[in-house]
Length: 391
Image (tube, rainbow, N blue to C red; front, side, top):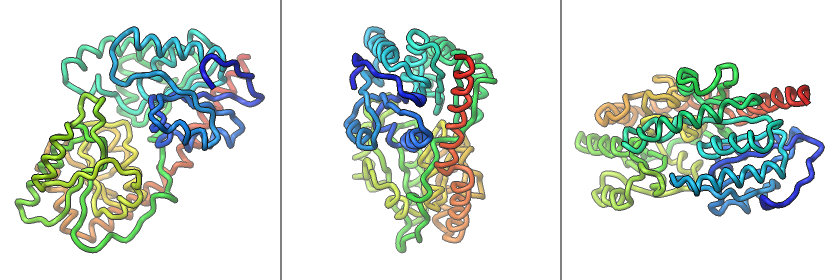
């Protein structure tokens, strides 16, 4: 259904989920959409189209392509997205809007104020984003304007803002971007513990993987440095990068650099993989030396798969990994410390097994998909109950 088509309001609540990409919806919001539908809500998905719209429709959801660019700063291009959402919301007249990722959140919240003020609004913040985590000149220039936009977006009177870690929530409250009583802490998007299951570690040379988008701020350079140090020290292992560069991101690592590392033999680069349960089953150690996250889903998947994790002691990662319980924490931007932690796991199959078992327990008890869906639907119901009273 396009933005210009009329739509009859259903008997049950109409929930419109808006994200930047259809692929993101499938990887992070599909279980929630299913849960909302099972709870009697009509769910409509609005997302930038990258080729997965048909998959969403095959799941039984109405899909509406969103004209959005991830890297544009052109005000006329951005205004087109806002105006599209204004017209769309006027026609759909949603009961509740759920915005995820930065541009849909900011633009969608503005559009909600202009077109459907009675709708409840849920905004999920999965990290501070490029403008607040990068020291690049462009990022520093963007911060003042982005603060004003965040403040306007998160001040909707019928809204709740979901944060995935307490550090992000504390920062937004401290900067007076959101009122504390309108915030909720739900740790991540959850993990399917039936899909990601423990498997015996393969025999042979241990495989150490870094599964992430190939961005500098994921700590890829530190991983390569650690691999060099461990090889020099005579530690035998395979070091594998898994993911694509995401060329529209300013932190993207050029493919030429990834190829050069591969040709050097210090690491292998496998590119993007869609079979992550199999990839994790073939790994001995999962590494994510990131500089900062909301709450990385790949760490939840590694925990559910019973694999020990080495990651940085930064926001988001600290929510998933407790050092000595289900992994090891190291300082960010420190290749030597990263090498020492990885090396200790390569040398000790028993430590890998103990930490892997700890990760599985945490995944089941704290991060299982059904728990996150239940918590998020509780936010929906709270707002919908208030909306009905106000109506």
